[in-house]
Image (cartoon, rainbow, N blue to C red; front, side, top):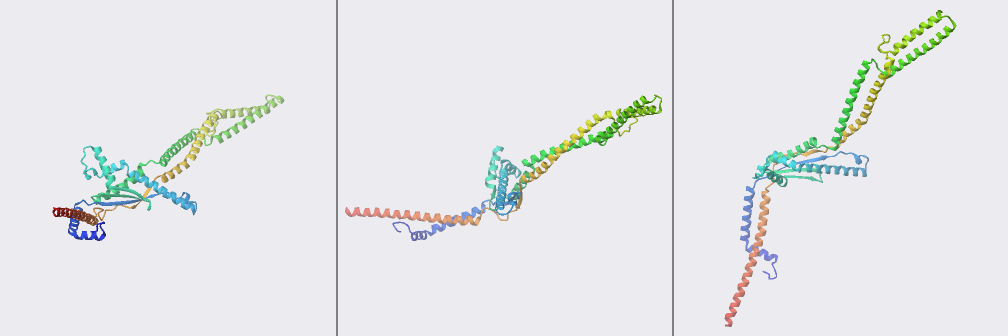
Length: 395
């Protein structure tokens, strides 16, 4: 060998010299790798991919060019935010504990711990570190859910449970701001609609009880009639006084005017007094007009107020329903979890090849080390022999 160092040719010669050592080590390691890959448990992987669905529109709907670019960027940002929410939900402690309980994973992980809290802690750690992979692919904008267990059906069921539970959480458990606003406005609208219905019933009963359809028009007509009769009575009274000044009290003109005055006075009293038999039921008595008008006006005012409130609330309620749909994150199952056809590990061929290559490299290093040690020993022995031979010669 070159004293200045080992060259490539020297290395090849050393390996060739100790080829049996290299071959023996490589064969033993390869056999051990084969046995290991046959004995180690097989793992099966199942996968689902979810596509977050974001509302389109906004800047992107305003036109082409820069608006399309900005709109697309905002849309992808919305998808990323949704994906982060999905991953956070599925990686939360509560969610993972539900998975452990659902599939009884504590015995599966062979956790022999009497403390239930500690056992759950270890199972959740195993689930997140060795069984589940949940991540977002920024190139495809897809959320990937992967489960790897010793049972292919168990892997598929765990992934399917993640998808179903996430969907259930979004649809039934997550109280978004839009949903809270919609429920509040819906309650307010329903309350005011019920109030309008109640007032409508009161108004109907009021009209039925007082035999009135429109108290304003009816009282206006009644007051007009009353004023006309009072005016006619006053005119007749003036004519009667004038006749008395010109004729005797038994004059036919004076008597006729007196009778007319008496008739008009009876009409006036019948209009002023309630419950008179001379007045039809549909005619409102004068003494009732202030109270009835006040009650009717109050009922109509309340109805109008409630209608105005509903006119104000209802558009906001409809808008809140749209905001709730937009605010609720949704997803589409791009790839549903399936039973694995090929095990995910162990990769037997790769294990054997890598082990054999590593064994070859290590055996070569070992051969070089042995060769180096052997060379140093030879030099030491030669030096010792030379020293002894030189001593004998001198003596």
